[in-house]
Amino acid sequence: MTNPVICTVDVVLLTLQNGALHVALLKRDKEPFADTYALPGGYIHAQEDKDARDAAVRVLRDKTGIRSPYLEQLATFSGVARDPRGWSVSICYYALVSEEVFSIARLSTVKLMAVDDLKTYLPFDHREMIESAVERLRSKSTYSSLPVYLCGAEFTLPRLQAVYEAVLGEPINKVSFRRKMDELGIIEPIEGAFEQGVPNRPAQLYQLKKGFKNVLSLTERGLNTG
Amino acid sequence: MTNPVICTVDVVLLTLQNGALHVALLKRDKEPFADTYALPGGYIHAQEDKDARDAAVRVLRDKTGIRSPYLEQLATFSGVARDPRGWSVSICYYALVSEEVFSIARLSTVKLMAVDDLKTYLPFDHREMIESAVERLRSKSTYSSLPVYLCGAEFTLPRLQAVYEAVLGEPINKVSFRRKMDELGIIEPIEGAFEQGVPNRPAQLYQLKKGFKNVLSLTERGLNTG
DNA sequence: ACAATAGTGTCTGTTAGACACTATGCC
DNA sequence: GGCATAGTGTCTAACAGACACTATTGT
Image 1 (spheres, rainbow over the protein chains, first blue to last red):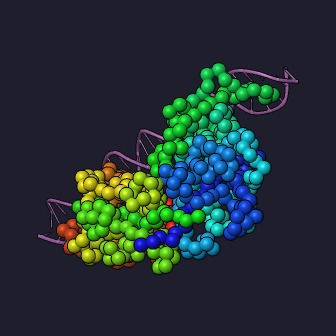
Image 2 (tube, rainbow over the protein chains, first blue to last red):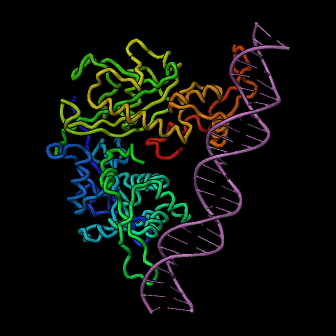
Image 3 (cartoon, protein in one colour):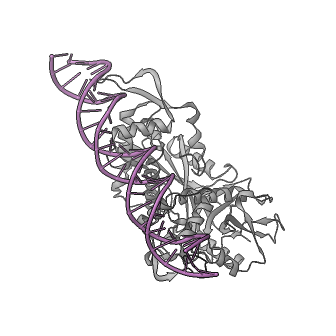
């Protein structure tokens, strides 16, 4: 039996800018929907990719120059109606990067849009993908350490708390937040390293514990690690 | 660009038997892995199925005769190595049915296996799929009302608690359990209806509230509803 | 010394589990 | 009345948020 199904991957690349969640969009250079902004995505290359995750990594690298430390399968979108070329399957991933990583990448072609105010028209079911990714991120942020990937490699606790607050869209109690971070046990202070150049008491710098550097990014479908 | 990727769906159908979680397996009638037990699955029929969920519903109906009230996308398994026929994608769903629904269905071809003691050899990555489904179910059971789908349409609170305990594998406090069920607010007592034929005080019968009958089963990727 | 933010000790209200009691069926 | 299980009232221990206080930098 032949199988005329189109197989693609799409990546919802999220980052923080000015304290608000943003998604990376690229102007499509091919039909359908040429010249409209859309999620980075592309066909699975059966000769080249070991699996769909590989394809997502490749697409992200080739189209944005970014190698994300966190990449998790979100869901698969499929059907006859979502793509004018015909019955298609898109395995959708979402990735989290810090603002700095983003500014280093080739930004010329990439456009950042605030996810809570997505005015642009989006082709396919890309709007639904973004909404799902944001919902997943918000949900996981209430009980896990996911948002650390939106910070750089080193960060202070007040900065991390601000990131959580930006993601969740509500203020968090300082004492509770620090207690939670402590008992999650996945970050550690960098001995003797403090914030620089602030006009007040400098905060302790923290980093992901060694063992967790790539643990989370290795959970293919994000089923384990809390 | 041609796309030689094989597109299939697989369904992890879970039920309770003798107080233990079981998964439904069928003997494969075609190669590869003919005559070995495997998850019900099959090709996406682009002419027939509106989307992958449709395909999962069809496969489940055709192969087991069951129309599950709960069906949620689990994850997508893909790659060059998982199927000897070549690069493949399987969009995996999981379904929950009550023991009774199961006994009505055509059981002759279907084999129930306890998920915590899966001795059988399983082809493809079906073992991983089952483990993921069980993990998802256990995880969601700690904060949602998912396990009601493992009961029939009418059930008592002691029965529902036993179902939760079977799924989670640990005893639950009776008072806390009833408080939680009450505040989840998705089940309601059937006025005047009680358990029959017990040698002690009969328990109140409950049912899913009207509005929730199919709400959960409509969440395509299980992203919303807690 | 003062302003500003980092970081901590403690109090209190909320919530989950333990326990004990009452309720209601069958024999 | 006795037994078994359903169902509820209440006490207590654990936890999360509020608040206030101390600590440490630059000016």
